Length: 522
Image 1 (cartoon, rainbow, N blue to C red):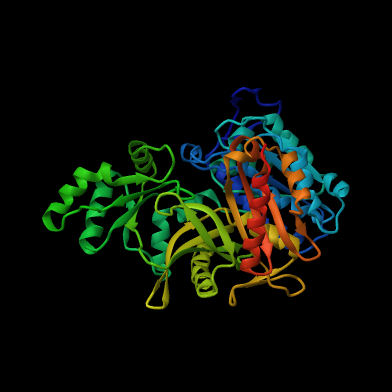
Image 2: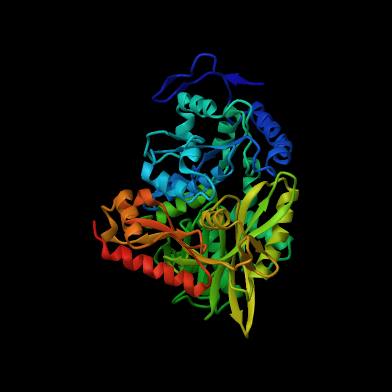
């Protein structure tokens, strides 16, 4: 296998005796695939046994395009969303190693540990290892870890001798593959060689292969000329079309999208000239502070798709979440109705669980065909399929929009619900029931924002929560949980999950929470 020695930026030479396979080399890829192939035996040995000694190393890196990611306020604190996995400490012999860009305030950690059912905070803390890069810069967390060989050694040292361990990541790229090989640990996630199955272009191809309904459009578009060709072809095919969506193949949360308006467009021979001449006037980029020129530069770097903007008086944006485990079993984990905002409703703001019973079973089982297709290609771990549902003549038409081969904004709320209630989601009925058979719902958001929240520290938030009885009641199995707490003081931004016995109850808990927060200024 090909080896090399390197100098790590800002950290001097690699520690004595440390040599590594060249990132992306055949040797590294071979070693990673070997780690992944052995993961099935590990899964079968320890995952079914809650008392088995094991360690989960959590790497909450958003290893996405950093320029697009920088448009999201407080994105470094989005790593805190995976603090929901501290709930794994309820298993008494499980250790958790959590690595973050910046240190997490102890009051935030205490807040999560307090939610653990059946385990004292003291016992959990003995098995929790918090490590930090002390780096709030814009590079991905995984890159920060790779730039710090001594931190990699501390991660290794935190895993008790004899423990079976694996990595849990937000998404898996070549960076996570390199880290996995250096740690000699498998990842419960998709091999980056398969990541292209989750691009916007490949998603459209898979939807057609699986006989799912999808918007009219074109994929594998490479540049501005290709975008214009697609816009002209769409309008020529559907003269009534008012808008089209331009999507970068690897965009996320709608931040890689732009909307083109056909307002004022002529019909017939003059259409192409009009689109060409008015292209920059008619395009609106969804991401804040991103110019059309920057968007097009990103598009040409990553390529993408153009598809019709679906209209409808009654229109929703549901999603379905799936898990493919190491033995190849596919689970429909959950469905959500996404709440969207921004330009023409393209930006993910939050979600309601479960999706409407009018179509939750249909989208869950339709998307399962996609999950089985991906399983046969070797995909592993959690991912989602997004839909757009339009009610036409009393019937819901569900259009598959995209595949997200990673965790997302609906992952952590559902994990919190599941950890706290020990329940299950029935994909056929679209109903979630707790361990004692009670039905539960929730509303979640990563974007509860208000200028008046700026300056509120994590300690202030906990004081407000206690004073206003804003907590999760384990007895009644309902209430509110906070996340993105670290973003509150600087950005006035907070995430919450409100669990209740009905959709109306979850909304009521949310409204009471916002009302309490609005009374308290920094």
